[in-house]
Every structure is written in structure tokens, then in C-alpha cells.
Image (cartoon, rainbow, N blue to C red):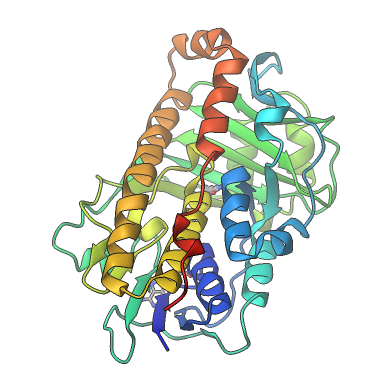
Length: 365
Ligand SMILES: Cc1cc2nc3c(=O)[nH]c(=O)nc-3n(C[C@H](O)[C@H](O)[C@H](O)COP(=O)(O)OP(=O)(O)OC[C@H]3O[C@@H](n4cnc5c(N)ncnc54)[C@H](O)[C@@H]3O)c2cc1C
């Protein structure tokens, strides 16, 4: 039987392990953290993530988390609440915003007991394994040991994130509000609590005496219900993350029997909400190819061929979107106002219209 070592029990590593285990591959996930960490934030999962999860048989488990959250009026607003653009609801009909901790719990629960070795930092040495899947995140040690690692770069902005401690009525409205070098986003979770984020352009080494007070101060006076969201959030649950991306595209996701997956391969800014969605696509692709082909090396090469162009294109678009949304230029709002909703819808549909590889139909080795 084929043996696969997965480095990292993040979303990418867990979905890979589910896909492989369901197809009879002997898989072990090594995670350096001693237990699942509390991740107090939401995560958007689009139609493409559900297509990928369905391809490995895990879609319904994730859907059971709840949502979609009904037809929301979503798009971009000005700080005074006036809408600049709206997203046609049918273009995001499958979008669900879930709590990260819930998603991790559901994914880990899909694996046979003992599959994840917590508190086990590891390297990309093959040892007794046939393949190593390095799903070891933005600062992947595996990638940094490759000669062509481009490294990571700070995107110039940082994000505070929080989840309200209780349900808050967002009045059927969600999306982003854009100021000058600042943005605020909100999305209801299936249980009515609200995931929110505040993004500000700042130096990487900026420090604040009180993160909660700082984010409140920056978005004071912005439209309702932003102040209510701060009121409903425990100050200790608010945290700030500097936004990083891969400094350039990798020439390959594969070196011998080691492949990079998820942020390790293509860390992107969160401006399209696609980082984890792409990790899930990677995971479904790799597990279907590896389990469905007698030739391991051919499967790994095919994984690289299928995944690199798409993920690098989406990372490039996320980068440009981040530049646009953080822009202080008045032209930004004009552009948002003049972009027809149908053009936005077309983009969103095309991003989500992904299909798994046909290798799923092949007979497993
Ligand atoms: C502010 C923000 C908002 C975002 N919002 C969204 C969103 O709405 N939708 C979306 O799709 N994406 C979003 N993303 C991106 C998303 O969070 C990431 O793309 C995704 O979590 C990457 O998953 P991963 O499994 O590749 O890596 P990680 O989640 O980073 O997992 C890597 C794991 O590997 C472990 N590890 C590392 N080294 C070792 C080692 N040597 N041995 C053992 N274990 C190791 C780590 O401890 C970690 O658990 C957002 C990102 C940010 C910063």
C-alpha cells in the first residue's frame, strides 16, 4: 500500500489526508502544534471549494456546518454606507462563511483516529514514505530549503479580525466598506454571530497599546452596524495579522517525491478570499491523481501541471485587488461604481467554475 506523509494539519493538509484515506492510501499527518489552536475568525468558502470537497466525499460534512446565510445584499460601500457596487446574489449562491475552528474540527473528524500526530514537527525527508505533501503554510520550511524559493513579502497592510460573541443583526447586508487605505468587512456566520475584519495600510513593525481600541478608533464613525460589531466582540478575541504573500511564482510545486500544497505553494493575499479555497482544490486534485494512478511520479507532475497556472493566476489577481482596495485614490471609488455588476458576476463565476481532474475515474493502483 502507498504511504504518504502530510506535513501540517491546516486546511490543505487535512483535506489532502481525507482524500487519500478515503481512497485506501495509508496517510499520516504530522502537525507541530500540540493541539488544534483556537482560530477566532471566519473563512469564506466558495462554490469551487465545495466542488473539490464533493470530489473527495467531504462536501456534505462541511455543508452541515450551516448556511448559506440567505440572500444578502453584498458588495462595496463607502464609510457613510452608500453602496458603490453590488454583487448579483446568484454569482455567490454557494458561498458560505464558516468559523475556522468549526471547519478544522469537522475536517479532522473525517479522518480515522490517530491519523494526525499532534506535537510532531517534521521535515520533508521521505523515510519510510513514498510521497511527502508539504502543506506547511506560508513560512514553509520545505519550500525554504528549495533553491528557487522566492520567499515571502509583506503586502503593506495588516488585518484585525474578530467574531462577535453573540448574534448581531446586519440587516441582510454584508461585504466590504472602503475608505482611504482602510477597509472594513463583515459576514454573518450560520449561527448569527458575525465575522468582521478591519484592514489598514501600515508598516509591518507598527505596534499599538491596545489592538481592540486601535481598530475601534480607526473605524469610528463608519456606517452601522460597525460600532455594534465592536460592542459585541470581546476585546481579547481581536487579533491582528500582517498580510504576506509569496514574493514571486515558484517554477515548480514538485521536487522528486515532495510536493508543496496550499499556502506553502502559493500564499496569496486574502483579497479574493481564495487562499484556503485553492488549498482545498490542490488537496482534491492531488489525492485523486495519487490514488488514481499507478505511476506516482506521473501523478505528481500532473498535479504541478494542473495546479501551478491556476493558483498563480489567482494569487496575481488577489495582489492587484489588494492594491486597488487599499488605494487612497478617488479613482478607486469611481472604478467600483462604473464596473457593471454583471462583469463582477462573470469574474466570480469563472473563478468558481473549477472541475476536478478526470483521473478520479481511473482504477486505483
Ligand atoms: C486575514 C486573512 C483572511 C483570510 N481569509 C480567507 C478566506 O476568507 N477564504 C480563504 O479561502 N482563505 C482565506 N485566507 C487564507 C487562508 O487562511 C490560507 O490560505 C489557508 O489557511 C492556508 O492553509 P494551509 O493548510 O495551506 O496552511 P496553514 O493553515 O498555515 O497550515 C500549515 C500547518 O502546518 C504546520 N506546520 C508548519 N511547519 C511544520 C512542520 N515542520 N512540521 C509539522 N507541522 C508544521 C503549522 O503548524 C500549520 O498548522 C485568509 C488569510 C488571512 C491572513
